Length: 258
Image 1 (cartoon, rainbow, N blue to C red):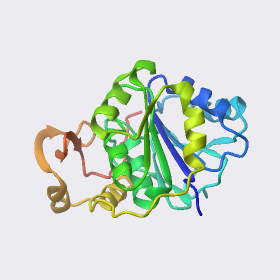
Image 2: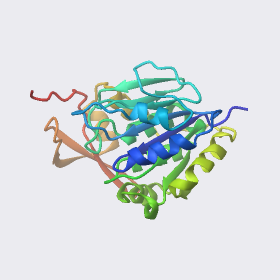
Image 3: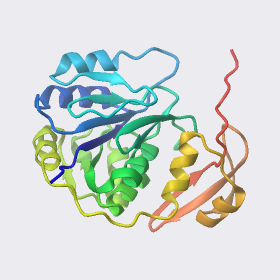
Image 4: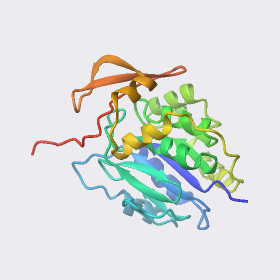
């Protein structure tokens, strides 16, 4: 029987140190692909791939569009691209920023929920604001196992606190306890397939760079008085139980002035 062979990790502030610790604790025969979204600046070239490779036994790289997922490898979302999981491969999305970030945690978790929810373990680590809470909720609803770093243990507690309150994860654990928990979870049989939310495919398509429509956005949310800070278009308010978030439907890549 297939195991849970996708480990999706999202983090922000304080995440470099957390990821380096985890990379040093993975086993050499770790039976899952590790996909990582961390808020990265596009102003400087990151050496996170080399740092994680040197820290432990698993090779790490910045994902390239079309990469085939391999067990025992770490794939990192590059700056300015969303990391999208498509069953056995990865795609890089040019869709709008979410939670004012690209890469954002939510598209990673949603795409994993859509393609392979019961095969996935998702985790939110240290960081500020609330990125990841909506995506982790979608992953849990799609049969994935969800983990949140104990906020009292995180370098920055706001992101795990938001995920804890709004997504009701399956496990809450300190960073030191995560390696053993991940080893246990990814070696478990994959869960049973469950129906996914009707809006997941649409939102993953937008994050990938597909075109949105006003009518579809009106179906999943309501128009707000807020304007997108990037394209200056209308923002939609999306209510998911106790979780309220805002999103833009524009898929036009941001062009920065030189």
